[in-house]
Length: 209
Image: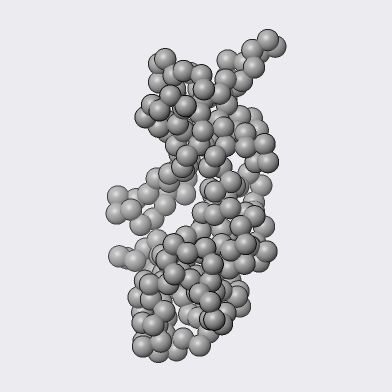
């Protein structure tokens, strides 16, 4: 599961926090769990936090090395970027977001989806459907949540993401585990997710949308 639309021109991969070392290394908050996203020589671009486009007039950088620290910084990543070889240079970059061009993204593994592609899809429940009963619309996916360790820094890789689903009646969102075994189909172009939800998962009286 990733953190941006697959077809957006730019993709956010990390938020630079502060210098981490004497040779320009930077501690960063990863914004994607895509394997290989921090590979050496990948071209990256600086952006303001929350921006979807690179800063105008700035040259691209390249990732020279990276590693994942342990201890209090577990769940973060240390980056060494081209041209950043001192504490002062790292301080000048702190607070920026790193972007890459979407056409430079590594391929997705089978069954993986971009978070932004799931948001806006209608979730359908096929558990009660049969020959004459079509899947039941549950609501619209408005967000995706990930379970983390108690300190909030490290995602629990074995825990299924949670789809936040809202119906059209304005009720409180329902959290639906995005469990592969429950998925019948995901059709991103049609904005449709069909899942076979276990009995009792939906609140009693959940209205059709």
